[in-house]
Image 1 (cartoon, helix red, strand yellow):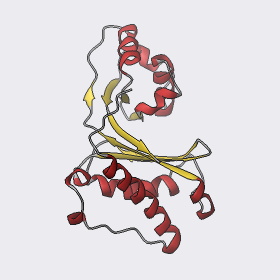
Image 2 (spheres, helix red, strand yellow):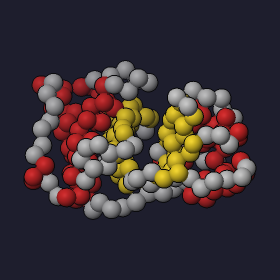
Image 3 (cartoon, one colour):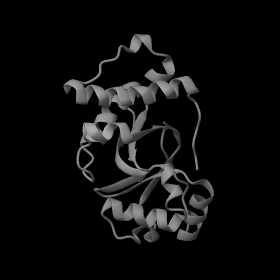
Image 4 (cartoon, rainbow, N blue to C red):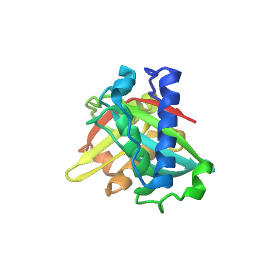
Length: 192
């Protein structure tokens, strides 16, 4: 699995605490946590994509993010923490009673690149089985992504791509036609 470690443990701990404080503040007074970027290390003010995943009893409870950065990392953590808790369409909004039982995971996304050109599905599968990157697939108006952590659940490239196609609203074997745009990316992933 392609996972990077460009942030030190102190930065990671800060972002995890920031995500939790964001959720606590929302339940306390429905306000959005405000942070002054001048007080933060440069590593937290870089412009990168960020996903925030919430887990309750080891089960996904919400996951929202953006692959391409359009704001500083710390701001992405604040916004995506709230979005994961309140707006993931797969789940009911998180309640204040659940907050103490929720674990937070943050994935900071490195720049995406197009996968190499492959002549056939087998070569694509071999490449993905070896590298386990995060993947974004696109075909016309359809697209979906899985973070690299999903390889822990969908352990073969065929399962990974089939489920990703279904998530995008495509037929599960659409990837075999070799007419998808496929992008890969790495993450810096850490959790409580």
